[in-house]
Structures are given as structure tokens and as C-alpha cells.
Amino acid sequence: MRQLSARPILAIAILLMIAVGSRAFAQDSKEMPTAVVAVLDLSHILWASNAAKDVRRQAEEYRVNLRNVVQAEELTLRDEEAELKRQRGVLSPEAFADKRQQFRTRVMAAQRRGQGKKTQLDQAIKTAMLQVQQAVIPIVQKLTEINGITLVVDKPQVLVADRAIDITKPVLEKLNETLRTVKVPKPQ
Image (cartoon, rainbow, N blue to C red):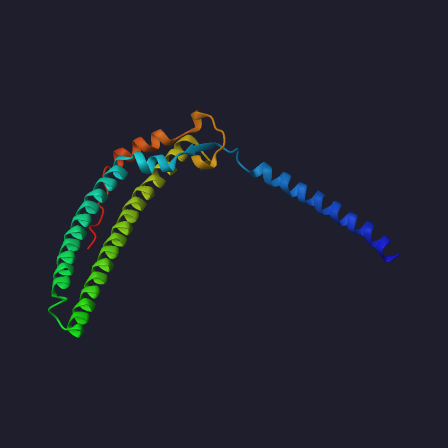
């Protein structure tokens, strides 16, 4: 019998929650502004802007220099390896093992240096591109204020949208006016 009397109370409680919740929602919806939505293709901006192109140009220069340094070091190590192979018959087994261990240590150190420089370059590029991305934010904020936009959605998150609400082009143009270049720190 307890279950029978509990059901009506539970049903009344659910109805009250729905009524109160819908009334609260109705009050909140009166206060909410009408949404004015715009679409922004941030990845396109980070690819096509003058500053982003300059970051890629600088990064490529650093990559070429890094590649040249690594190749020169590889040539030196190959010459050392060839010399070590020539000395194999001349040196005692212990002396040869010692020289071979020293050579391996130099090879590992060269690999660590190369990886370290690559990591530094990747971090420098990431930092520079973050500057470009951060420069986009005030431009978008200003555009939203001027046009009464209440919501900006990144284009990959949009399934269908009218081209008229795409603000990518004006944002890109303003970014190109205000930020032409970003210095990519040289990897040490």
C-alpha cells in the first residue's frame, strides 16, 4: 500500500518541478538577447594571413639551417666512424672498445642536440603562431561590437550557414593591416 500512496506524491512533485522549471525558463528567455551569430574560419586565417606566412617563411629558413648543421655533423661522424674502422686492426681490443664507446657517446650527443634544436624550433613556431591567434581576438571583439554579433562560431563546428554571416574575410583583412610579421625566436 505504501507504493500506491507514494506514486501520486511522486507524480505531483514531477509536475511541480516541470511547471516551476518552465516558468523559470520563460522568465529567463525574456531577458536573453536575440542571438546574432557569425562564422569565423580561424584555421584559414592562421594559414592565409601575412603574419602566418612570415612565420612559416622564417621557420623554413631555420629548418634549412638546422638541416645543414645536422648534415655537417653527420659527415664528421661518418669520417670518425671510418677512421675508427681503419684503426680496428691497429688498436688493442680494449683500446678499440674504448674508442668505439667514445664514438657512440658523441653520436648520441649529436642526436640529442639535433632533437633539442628541433624541439626549440617547434616551440618557437608555436609561440609565434599563438601571437597571430591572439591578435585575431581583439579584431573579432571589435567587429562583434560594431555589428551587434552575440556569438562567433569557428567554421569547423558549423554544419550549414549562410555566407553572409561569415566574417573571416574582414577579420583577415584587418589582421593583415595590423600585424604583418611576427618574429620567430631563433632556436639556440
